[in-house]
Image 1: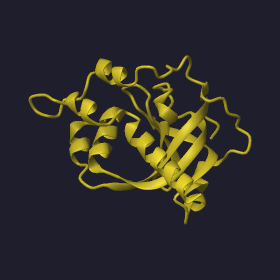
Image 2 (image 1 turned 180 degrees about the vertical axis):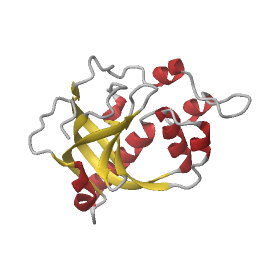
Image 3 (image 1 turned 45 degrees about the horizontal axis):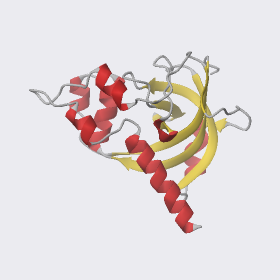
Length: 189
């Protein structure tokens, strides 16, 4: 049982860091004279080749799920307390989405915190206009430290200014979620 739990944790971490193919290929996309160039949309899209593009701005993405028994996203911190990870279904408002390709989104969990959502096996993407919509997500949640390099990468994907990106100097503890399926609806909150 412990081995299965460890495999689930490894899968979640690998999925999180692999969500934007964060690694050597990705780093080369940032090479430039000043070292601060962001990769082009074309390069970023190539990294998600094979992912299913969203056909609309609402509906089901990834595995087909239902909203039945979805818990409010703001309950996540309490549900994860004392656990390494938890499999569940949440609902909440999307606060931001990757503007390069839709390869991740953040869902508001209250008190200024978010849960960072990536998509199982990087098989599907979110519409870039998902912010402000209500999401139902089903998958595995963890609470983990996110390295500075990844935080800067995510800030770039979100379209933040270079000044905001440069201000990121410390790792951050963050709720992460690997979703196997997502439902996007017009905002219900």
